[in-house]
Amino acid sequence: MLNLRKLVFTILMPYFMTVMALANMDTTKVEQQDRETARVLLTAQDFKKLNCENVGDALRNITGVYINTEGEVSLRDVSASKVVIILDGQRLNSPGTVSVNVTALSIENIEQIELLRGGRSAQYGADAVGGVILITSRQKQSESKVFDFGVRTSYGSYNRQIYSVNHSMTREKINYMISYRRDLWDGDYEYSTPSPYDPFKQRVKMTNNDQSSHNVFFKTGLNLAGNQQLQGSFSYYKSETGAYGMTDNLTPKARLRYDNKSYNMNYDKDSLFYDFDLKALTYFQDYETKFDNPEGLVPIHSDHDNYALGLELQQAGKLSKLISLSYGYSYRNDKIHSTDIKNRIRDTHSAFTTLILANAMKTILSRWEVDLALRYDAPSDFNSEFSPRVSVTLSSEGKLNTSLVSHFTRSYRAPTFNDLYWPRDAFAVGNPDLKPEYGLNYDIGINAAMPVEFINISTAVNYFNNDVTDLILWAQDPSVGNLWTPNNISKTSTWGIETSVTLDLFKGMFVLNSEYTYMKALDKGPDVNRHNKYIIYRPKNKLDLTATYRLQKIEFNAIYHYVGLRYSNPANTKWLPSYNTVDVNATYRFNLLKYVWHTTLDLTNLIDEDFQKVQSSAEPGRMFKVTVGVDL
Image 1 (tube, rainbow, N blue to C red):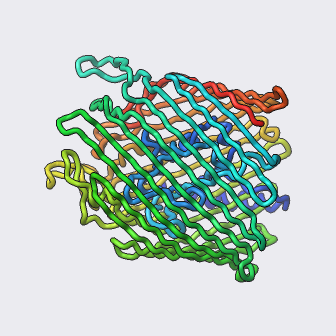
Image 2 (cartoon, helix red, strand yellow; image 1 turned 180 degrees about the vertical axis):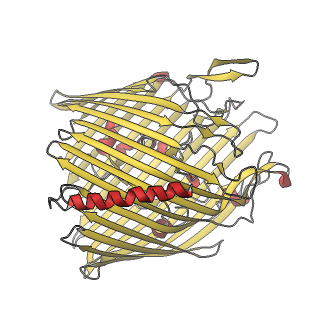
Image 3 (cartoon, rainbow, N blue to C red; image 1 turned 135 degrees about the vertical axis):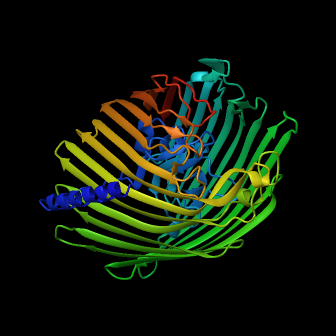
């Protein structure tokens, strides 16, 4: 492993020096690419190309991103509980839940999604061990219209029905946007399962997998005198789904219900004093989750009510031509009322600052930047922690635009309420003696872009390393009757290489993109049966290829996914085989009755691949969806 890591640096450094030298051949300035390896930015154009319905659909197309059936996001080697999701500055994670369901966030409301890999606790607080996903909602549907109104409806396999309507308006100093989405699905697809008496796979029809949801989003903005802006938003998500369980332990009558409400208020003031602006954010979350299973020896009724109240103040500005400074304070109060873990409260006070040193130059190196970030978190139920982060960026512009970006950071995660207080039942018990887990992460990446007349080529290569100590790991423990319980007994060491290559021909008429990740995520804990074994469900290889063809009113996209072998138990004696899927979609836009219409045909899993993402789960085969929409 050590020799291979040395080989990576041996390859990266000469490559960087070469492209930096080539870049000096011309001083033409070209836009910096938005798709790197440690950072990926998805916009409304990407959402259309991928025919996304929700935020989860968009994230699935990024290598190193894994989304389970509950819509929870994992990055690289870390679980969903260590990835922070932020919407318009509002942290969606809660100590009373495992993670955030990104499939509940409708894509109609989203302007862009920014993915930041690696430890980010210095900027975004505890739990950001694996990375951060920043989601920005829209203010209005179109920048070119005062008034917008759109309707879209979809129908697909297994009676999938989606109805959405959105409206926005900008009038002098005020603007607003409102949208509603209704989603229905029978979910009764067939899947393959091996019979205990027959080695050949049998086709079984899925039951209790129906889904029904309502999603409402409203956002308004007001431009005030003196370069001041005030924005407020409200979101409401209500759903009921069947909870079929696992294919080897079905729960045909279990139901899962969500009732989530979120309120957000932002205030911005430019140039409060000198060059420093002021940003203030306050929010309130009310998330309710109910699970009922009337069957079994003991019927289950589980009710979790999570509440969060937050306040954040931040100022940023320039101290000099070369030095920028930002600093701020945040407070968050988390509460949970639960039939399972009773009533719990956590108060967290935080202070954070970032110092940026940057300078533009007229040499081979056209710009350098050093970011120094530090955050102090003081939770009410654990010791206070400092999280530092150092980032260095070197860039050059010319015929070949290049940049080298490196990060080094320390992150931490406090145990959740579930980790600490889950009451003893027939399956699991919490551990109130848990300690926070800590991660050390560093990565170094090279990005290059070369526009040549009608061709634009961009590439990115990134090496990353992440070591976690006192990792909180749920496992069966003989000391508590072989129940599932969390312990700080495992350590992990992960390293890998992420690559991205994009070829853009004739100004977007034909675009090819390749994203590949090689990763070794190893358990370094003291258990001899797990030491140096791969972390479960973390493949060595993941590849995504996307091809886009645009001609006047027609757009065609083809997406190929490859996911390598994944071990399904910590001892690596069981595994799920690799799988390939192909998705295609075609969109036609046309004018009818003075309105702009669009229709899309979407085919997922075109080759009808039979696979499992997680042991004892079921994935559908080939499916179709037809969408028709109009913008007024």
